[in-house]
Length: 216
Image (cartoon, rainbow, N blue to C red):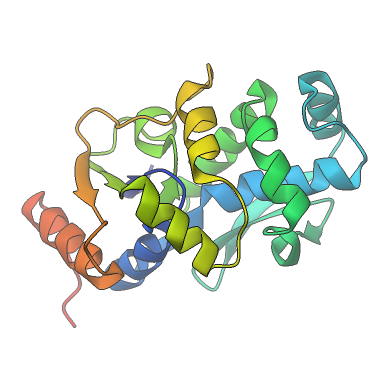
């Protein structure tokens, strides 16, 4: 496995924006695991399966051809050759992504894809169980948090209507790979920090941990 920087955190904590900037600064590829789960959710809905039925979700997944790889420094996931990126923030996907994400077959499938991608390139991976489950052995783990109020404000500013408190309860209480602070992870509170402020702190800590940072 190549070098992995794992970044976890709750919805709207700013982790994706931070991860993109950190990956660019390091020259690593960027992987948004949440986008992978949303792509699968979109496909489940497109196939008219019930996102609340683990059996239906697993059945659709088992008969679908899923491919992952890298383009322009960012990971992609395609189902039956289709790029779901334009549909990832659709209202239906927002509602269904949480129940689909807890299905064991989905988590096993996407965990395998994420680990396979990390065999190919150095990566910054963002998600909810990256440091705790997917890459527990990486020494470069972070958990980005922010107050629930600020995160809800950020979500509304993005034009998204999902309820942060509900997402938090689902993510933290699910039996399979719940959202948690991974052992050894550095916690950064972004409530009063800009994205660049979080990035700077993360780069500082990565340097202290011995990761070579490219000179600009």
